[in-house]
Length: 379
Image (cartoon, rainbow, N blue to C red; front, side, top):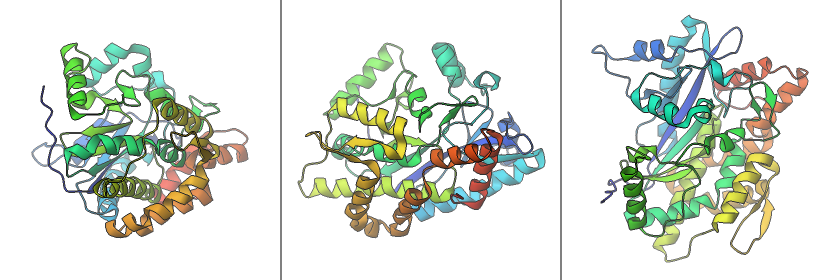
């Protein structure tokens, strides 16, 4: 089968941010996405163009338009966040974001009544019902289809960096998991999720897609839920690595890091220089290390098995990406990565709140609510 790739301006950016709706008094999840979305619908009942439904009725997703800069996408997010807040507050509800809710129980959550979601749950059963998780997805525009798969491979070499910076799911169902990102290992249990297969040519992707459609594994390309994937409909590389991020500052920083990575490697391709290309076994190991240890992970950096602490290599990459950030007008957003390094990733901040409260996780939820309101980390 042919798999056309849409025309997209180079290094444009779009962001998807999944938000949890929580009770303002208890901090537990609220199943009110449907009335929230109805309240945001147009006069003719048409859905809000930038606030979407998701798998669970405790979740809404903010989706930006296509922008040249992270700042432009962030304005969309801020405006739409304010709209959603105006609707949830009269319901005695509030908003938070993290890779997982610290104490909510997955078997208490209700699924959106839509065929694609019902089919997913019917097929995946217990694992599908565990998908009480939230993420941030960043799309970066690619102007030439021939670049897509090399760029996917290059971005995967920095998977662990993005996962460590965004890790925000240390708790699951009220328990400490010992992982910085429990979400990363939960989500890969779904069919077609997790790390992508090694694909060298666009025809390999077309064959894979054709095989999955023919055998009924998927009904549409969007059901290929890889951590980094081509998005042919939008003409982008979509990076789905990150846990849910609690604050707009962190979303902007991670989006800038992602956009700059893609732009930097696109320029390297134009110059005829080789891109990073880690063996699959190192990619898998880096995913596990960053999920387990977060900012303390020692990652494999290249095919020669050289290693370094993730925070050390992030700071090195900030210098490498500085010229791309200037071209993309996101230097300030990229520099905000330093604030995450200084304040700690969300999983570290959540653990500190839990420690101070003697293990009570309700204050962790309220700290996440306050970080979203403040727009920045607070510890």
